[in-house]
Amino acid sequence: MGQHDRRTPITDELGTVLLELARAVCRSWYTGFQSITELPRIPDLAALPDRVELRVPEGFAFYAVYPEAYVDAARRLTLEGPPQVIGIRSIGTTLGAVVAAALGAAPPGTLRPFGDPFDRHIAMSSELERDLLKGDAHYVIVDEGPGQSGSSFGAVADWLQEHGVALDRIAFIPSHAGSPGPQASATHLRLWHSAQRSVGTFRDDLPHLLQQWAEPLLGSDADVGTA
Image 1 (cartoon, one colour):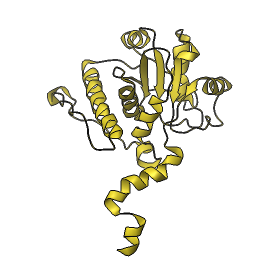
Image 2 (spheres, one colour; image 1 turned 135 degrees about the horizontal axis):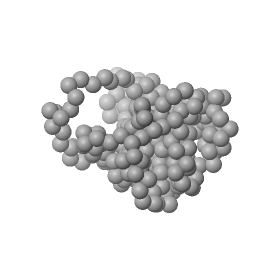
Image 3 (tube, helix red, strand yellow; image 1 turned 180 degrees about the vertical axis):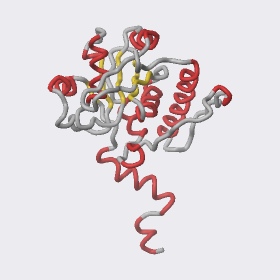
């Protein structure tokens, strides 16, 4: 298989560290940014690659995707079994971790769908497949979007259903409440509207939250007006 996801000791260790950081984010959110849990130990740097390539996560930088909104979205879910979170890389790595932390779940699995942008597929090692399918889990698929086709969300859900997971054990956490765009297949549209969804957005709460966050630093409108 030319392209597939797999587990390694270093990805497992980094996944644990990321989950611990996500728990600190949850604690900060629950306490109004007043407290965090103890931060995790940094892994042995000698075990890490000498160089890594990073890209700016567009959802965080440009599209008002807030990890804290995904914390709230996770807590609105109704689950029929232990949560198994699957984050769709790349931004789903971070978002999946905060969802797993909010649900008290194990470190999430991460997958990167590949192929035609409007017809994505996934592939993974047999070890990762066994790990994701073990137990009687309720699967929570996490990403921003959906975009023009929703095929990344759809690819993960397709794989789960092909391996015997019932639709009522699949949930989506996207970044907006809209449907996949005009390139979505009829199958994925039906799946999208049939599965449980909880949207990672602050919706109408955002103006109030921004005011709440900014006032301690900038003062109220009245204070600004008299300055």
